[in-house]
Image 1 (cartoon, rainbow, N blue to C red):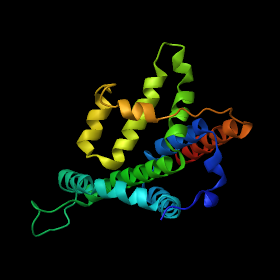
Image 2: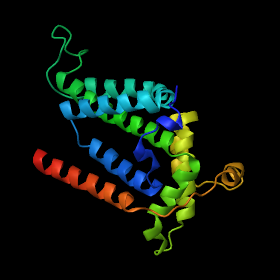
Image 3: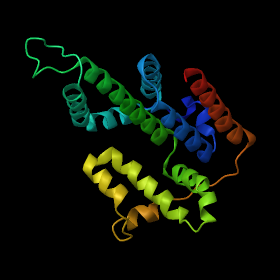
Length: 217
């Protein structure tokens, strides 16, 4: 059951552009984590999803079960290393392969949980408004940020209800106005003036991530 708005944390009221900037920083940082740090991140994100985005996260994870099986098989049996079944070396997965599968699977799990939280805290109007605001520098170069915002919304919504191959098609092919005319007319663009905290929080998070990366290096 999804928590009601009255139980939403204070950071859910951040400007959508700040929310997206923090989300991108976290997702990027997850791709370099491994071992215990990755396991801790997955545990924290899973706890947050159980509180605020249980139904959404479960739906997203179910759709990726086949992909996870393929990922484990690819790394466990395709990575050279020490075999686990000594009596059947040709049929055995390797220890190194299972470690690789666990790391990549953990990063995928953490990313999916982040997507669930993003979609839970940013309704369509705020999500489009956040992407639109973040793409403001690109507008000076003639980039159509309106189409980028709508494309992002369509892709994230498609993740929840479509097969994985259909999501990739939506990412790679142009969005036909006729095909998504109803969605385009039903989405409002929410814009608001950012506060000082909306600038400070992404900057603080970036500083923490850079400091943490420096210590791990």
